[in-house]
Each structure stands twice: as structure tokens, then as C-alpha cells.
Image (cartoon, rainbow, N blue to C red):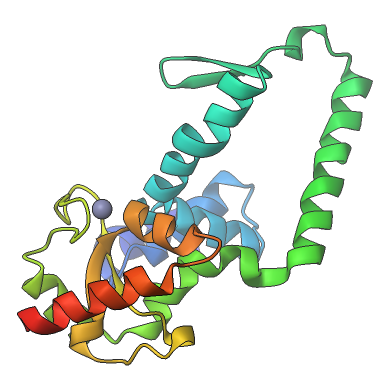
Length: 207
Ligand SMILES: [Zn+2]
């Protein structure tokens, strides 16, 4: 394969069902012609706007606030965060702190397992595409909690009464939530079952 063949492939022969092929080729071009599966997957992830937006929200409203306002370890100017002590660190100290962070990350994941990412996975796996379409149509493509439209913040299908508490897999038990409202609902430590049932009953009457 030479330059001309690559150019012809990318410009005329590549049949795209998604952005995957150009992202993978670009990743290889930018990393000296070779790349691991994980690296390519991360590049693909960076194009998934709803995932990136979700973590932008986490950064600004959760971790960024804790480290900046509460702990005073970082500062913020516009869209940029600064580590306050960075200028004073030697290269050796910097490495030591990075390793300390790695220990903390690995320790937390070892202790809690894959559960810590569950709130992102659940909604996509649980509901088939045709049901998702019906739920979003019924919600007029808006979050049923805060009202934000789907094109501003991507919507997810939520079980009103959770499956773990016996909530059924049927349209009356589904609602469209934006990823912010959905993560707030999922992150509640002990869901108030009574509230959930009231909400469920309310929806039932509407249908
Ligand atoms: Zn919302």
C-alpha cells in the first residue's frame, strides 16, 4: 500500500457506516503508524459527544468544584483549570504524585469493581432501539425531569421504578431523562422507593 492508494481509499473507496474507519486511520497516522486497540478505542470515544459532554459536566459540577472551591488545590480561569503548586514541583516530585494518584485510582477500582461505571452502561443496554424511539417520541424529545431538548443534551431511557426493585420492562415504566438528570437519579445512595412508586403511579394514569 502506498500514499496514492491510501488517498484513493480514504477519499473514494471507504464505505462508512460510522466515523470508525477515518478515526482509526487518523490515529495510526498520528502515532507513527502503529497503535494499540485501547488507544484506537479512546480516540473513537473522543468523538462520542454525549460521553464527552457527560464528563465535562462531571468535571465542572463535581470534581472541579471540590478541588477548586472546597479544597483550594486548583484554580479556574474561564474553561481552564490550574494546579496551584505545579510551578514549585520538581520533576521527581511530579512523578511521585502521579504514582500516588495511580495507586489511589487502582485501589478504588479494585475495591469497588466495575460497579463504579454502572450508571453509564445501564440505560444503553437495558432498552431496545424501538422502545427508545417510542419513549423519546412520547416525551417530545425533551428530558421529562428538566425539559432540556435532545439536541442540547442527549436523552437516555430510564426505568422509573428500577428493575432491581421489580420495575417492569414496559413503556409505562420508562421515561426520557437527559444524562445529567439520569446520573443524579442513579447516583442517589438510597433511592426513595415511595417517591419512585408515586412517580410510577402518576405516569400510569397518564397513559
Ligand atoms: Zn434533565
